[in-house]
Image (tube, rainbow, N blue to C red; front, side, top):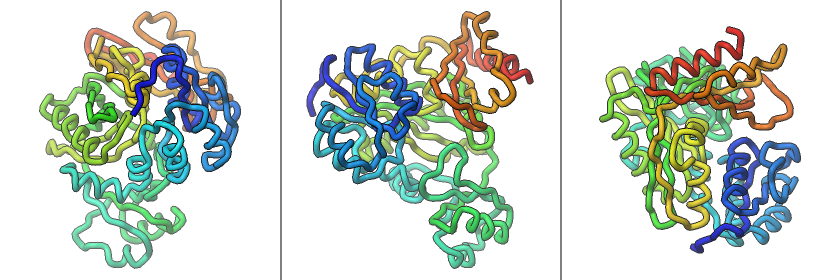
Length: 378
């Protein structure tokens, strides 16, 4: 592992908003950045030193990226394993193929979490109709069926209340390998974002409490409003998982909290995470700077919280009939607008986010909800 000072060239596979923030921070720190993405107008491609327009499995383009860059990272976890293996043979890669492959399969991810001491929600593997017929009689409905691979932001998921609905949901998902998760009564959802270095050093960001709407993150608030013992346990379990999979880079681990206080592992993302966007405005070092520090073999940055903060996502639905009233935000000094540079708004598409800093987390959450209501006209 080499230590790479400013002036080195970094690469990122994926041109979405996570890649865009990576590019912004890397350029600010003095690095050149190459971005590979099939969309020439993708958010990160707009700001790259060099934009490679290619598919994620294009061996020629990947070789060009690997040869040009001193270190390479990813912007999303569905990069083919073969692509990562090729890049690892040519450049300093973080994260490596193993943890990324693990995050691509919900069932394998849950199995690894269990072996690392974490507790997933009760679940079952559904690979075919026979698995439905043989489903353990102790498994209770309602439940949610999720495709094992390529699902995010509520995609590839179906709610089912009976076995008959489960069979229909399985067919609607394309009869591919799925995970059936028992629905539990939730007290809250939280997430832990951390960074782990090549040497195994870990820095953990303050735990966020999250609210989702239709499978997509709506708001995050930090500090979490959950008991300190619960958030400390979540941070400890996230660290254990990071060590167990030997992850190198930024890692996000999402948890459910049951009404009885039980902490359940939900899923992980081997990259910066939407619920960690608050770090852009409210911590000493952001999750994107940590991503750069890790891949460059530099010391991890401090994760101290500078101010209580809340974040709300802005989806393409807000642009459905007219542009949202974003100018309203500039009348509030504690609020920060982030737009991602996406060309075409679509329902459910993340177009940007707003963060509000305040004296306490309750006030921050109230402010961000008020701002969203004003922007959306609701």
